[in-house]
Figure 1 (cartoon, rainbow over the protein chains, first blue to last red):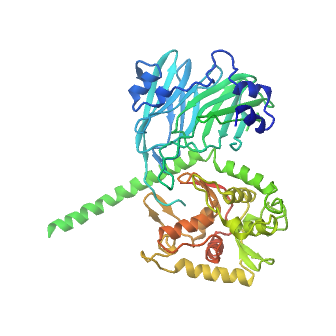
Figure 2: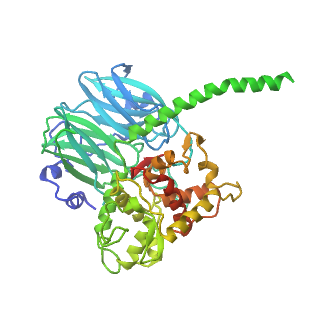
Figure 3: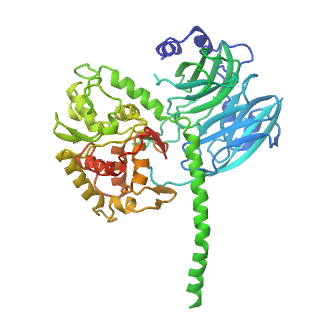
Length: 154
Length: 106
Length: 267
């Protein structure tokens, strides 16, 4: 199904929405059809950082990474990241032991809180990195989340 | 055609707080079906959120975002009655756009 | 001589540590569950279920909007809180899914086989029943469970359910009671409710159906029983069978009065 049909079926999508989906945002907007394949193919923190265009990253205490220490199930692990670093432009989530390290890359325009909450899949107990791009420089914090093996499902 | 998203947008102080659930299988491409064949990867790759024609968030996702994805974020500049529009596009080119009206503080 | 005693003493000394570790582990798991609570994927299933309820389908091209779930034709609000119950038109005690099958056959013209052919979603095939159950259960959210055990067939269902609950069988010699008959039991890190203790039952029974993150879909009590029977290595318990419904009536007696928090969210 082509996108125009999908949008119509979506129920009265506005002209703005159509424009949005067609990629007709203001210049500089990140929502186009681009997808950084190289970055999503990497297998460790260092390679992912490089694929995203970073040379080095500094560990920072100004990134608040909220996640449970133990995930009852690796299929759905709730995490949130709030960056206190000025001029935060992007937040990325890296899961070290997953088949591919990069989970998501969020671009934060001015006026939007440098905050993201989402849920990720973890193949096994692993370090998760919250990687922040601020004012052209990379910062990160890291947390280990344990993934338990099954119990029941009640 | 994917099922609609569930979007909740409300004022929290001077910010719009958005929580969205998307209906998508987010197949990693690593799962085998009952016949032992690999189920091809099928996942949302791009997400964009606009308000008043302006992009307030955009994202590139991989296969390790959970099935039936959830996203939570906040932005300034919206008020009750405004619309927030969210679009996703997956690796097969399927797409979905839904909008929600911003409600007053919750 | 001295070694076994030392070993036992050593292990006993570790127990308080183990218990403390278990407590902090449980706290973290509780935190995990709370973080998930703010956006339950079951919402998506509720929405799809509502659409299915209102869509004209089947040989008779009719919707389910005239379905009688016990409170009269088309009354959905509060119906789940009073299921299972005896129905005059089928002269049977029926649970939600059994009643949906009745309505799909009488109102929409499907055969029983057609209505029952896809009870549980697989990653490759979504089940309409799970979506419909999510919608109907959600319409009883916040209400108190009030399953009637009054009609002779309801009382019979309870009695048989009780027999089934305590009956040990299968290669493990397990009954439901083996896991759910005492307080404080657990499997790995999963706490097990004592289903005959209202304190546990009122909190747990009322959270079904629920989105199970490990299954990636909403599961109902029918599926929970199916899964339990599989885990006990008992023969399969059939979808919407008397056995399944009898067990639900038995459990409901102890869960009655609990507040319905469905669709819930579980591992």
